[in-house]
Image (cartoon, rainbow, N blue to C red; front, top):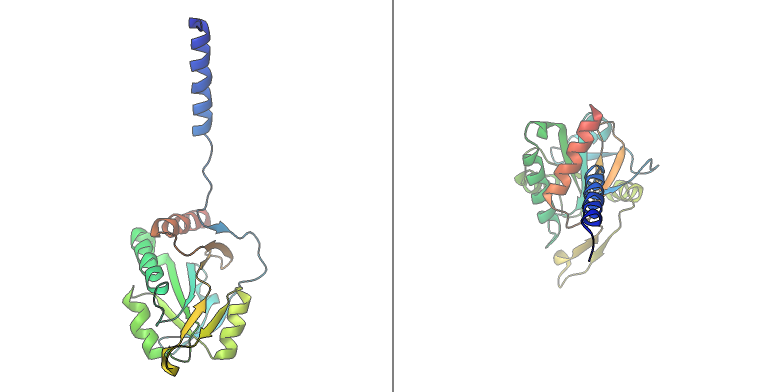
Length: 199
């Protein structure tokens, strides 16, 4: 049997350990940090409005970049829904965020189709497209892979593609990779952190 002194010492030790644990800072990001990468730079594609967009003009905002396609059966729409929910959760800071959806299927995803699809999730979201060469160049810089998979008819093919999202800080630096399946709380938390540290 332990003595009262031993019990008091044990309680004090446990309390000290608990307090020490409370003082630790949680990891700043919930997505995967990409410190000082030399890839994933600014690029230029055409938006669903028909205007050429150089992403350098978006510096000052947090950018969230996602590659997908409008006929995607199970990945793209849920991701865009989560990004819309995350942006809504930011309140007054929502205007400091720009979501970019780059199609990996420019053959079917015309500017008109992107214009109907992407802003339907959130009016400020931008759909981007380029010809095969521009898409390949941009995807390569972000280490994104995509490949056409034949369907039962020529028009019913699908696209295999990388499914994560990339997050840039307001200085235009690629900072985070968020894996597919992350909830809107992950995006909202990390975006707030980038905006907070940007001042």
